[in-house]
Length: 393
Image: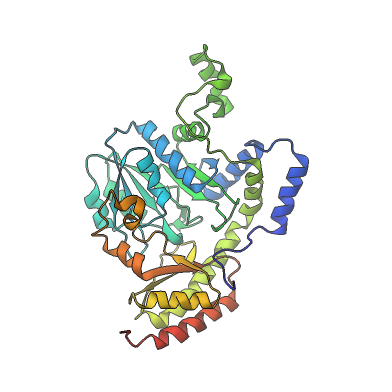
């Protein structure tokens, strides 16, 4: 395969750090390196608190669980979610027995159709779970205006948009909390892993409890004395303050995170340089392609193709495959058309989500994509799209 979605992102330096750690430690479960990685990521992200978990999906799961407990959501609470996103922005809402309220996408930043978002709010709305897709920051300011002074929590799924900014402030810092993924194919990797960032200490404490069974001993040591006084009849070692999960990560993965994180800014620079080259190539084909021209602050995740003529999309995708360029659908497409949802929800009336579902796909963008690959992409696009100017029967 000439151009994969992601390649071997772990460098010799990363592997040497990992093997050195393995040879010198007696502790592999969550311990000091997890804490070091959380502190380093908090500094990089510009937030007060970080909680490292085993995936970005788990990050979303305990964010919903902690927000529900913190704000005492009733059983009929509604959470507004995107119609286009990865399923685990949605499934924690369903698994928590709350009602997901789906809102169509827009074709400018791929987030909510903001007019429809405003119309979807009811007196049962307790949260808006926004996903910053493909490295494009959503219009947080518009969402904040829509929320106004209503008691609605804003949660951010930033798993595809690490390092993206709005007016110089990184996404994930605008709501109660933000989630990040370090899966193999993302901006940086710990192979498997995720992070939650927040500036709210009470929410941070709840996240720590939810991460590990609800155990009191998971809280920072400065809180232990008061908790022991409050519950003297229960052994502190097995004192459970909340319901919880086990979504901890390991020292092994944290060591990789500490090795990868210093390279993040450089990786993002390369990704964004590639996206600018992609935009230059697309200038000649805007009669055939819908092109996302992001505002400043994007952190490119992939190179997306949106064909105005649906018949041309599979033909170009096949062309890419023959050239050894791997591709995928644009996330879920219209998520409500997926089997796990369409038995419960009506997938119609999501015009932009359907356009994305039927007309779009993406190829990889990462630090291994260089000028020679971008030049080859330009050649392939020219060969296909100039020929494709004539309508297909």
